[in-house]
Image (cartoon, rainbow, N blue to C red; front, side, top):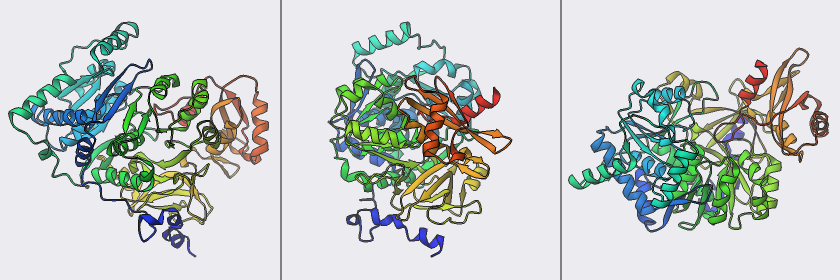
Length: 578
């Protein structure tokens, strides 16, 4: 059988629940909507009396909004953008804030205005902010007050004509908000002064409500014309591959991904009954699609944690709310498992933890199941794919595995020439499906090199088993070549993670005269008591000789992205500059 033919036969299809469709191909349970505002409005109306969002601070102070309030406020914000700021349909509006109550209101309002949402990392430097605002052509910005001083020095070099300011404690009860603002302003000194002419979020909503009433505006007129081919979101890829570029995600990309999630996890999500913890930042595509959109559509109560670091910031959320779902990355789960308050009193209502963003270590997955009693289901995706490509069917999770392709998604593994590789052989993952982006915003050359003949080239190396389950081996760029042998850092890091004293590690290739590259490991310990020799001896027992680290260095901490992904690129840069 030819390799192409094998992939075309979709060996993974047998794992879809046959009940979903006659063909055995799991189809989305139903066609949701033609655009995101229609989906948002439907959820707002269906669950209007229920709690939609709670922001939970590290001390347990909180503010909350119902579905009905989010619906009314996002409508008002849409009118503000169109009638008061005079934005045209398709205008880019940026949102720069950590998880807080303002975020869903303005994100939904931007989409309802027929504008394009630009998610901006609040931790960006001035240079990164300026690049993203100008690259996207952002004309309005909603920013949290803590970071407004960064904006002041770059604003005049952008096209932004209106700035709206909010706070993490927005819409908290007045007494609670007052205490928090004082703490932030005087003790933590994180609220900078500024001289910009801005609207507060309350002023913006008030102006929107007045215009809506004065002109008897039906907000749906702004978005009824939108269809699945229209751009909804510019989601910038972290810049780990060079200059940050905007993946252009359409309403159809995102809704298709929701339908795909629905068709495989829908039976496990009880409409109106779930409580999901959102510790990952919503400006990241994983949390945006899964936590914000998918669970809002299902009427879940979403508990927002503005910053999960230190990990103790999540404790009151677990204590005070019946968390049934959580999404996270390996480092988040590993950190929780190192906390006594979590392991002694694990969340009793937890159904499933969803993992993505970076490889889930087998040791972490096994320990989680032992402590919490429910699984971590690992998936795989990228910013450019809205993000879900593969998932572990709930109840059929496999360790060390990203599972099977989402419904209506084709996945192949190819060699350097673009030819499919045999089953069991590593190859670059390429993907085709309704969730794949339109392209990179204003970058036709980069789009053409990433999407060829309708297939998106991920840059990740994977292996497929006979029955269609996939495993990530590593990023193409991170692969280490030792004497002609491929070494995948994930495999070595996973091995090191099984040493009880180790918290985490980063494995990179360093130039070596004899072997081309040598494997070096940079290790953070949970507790003292092991040496470089101990780590190497452990690896020798489990790995082929060429994969064993030549050198082990102990560090206090590893550089990470805001989502908690270890930045091997920065480890390499630090090491090579020494």
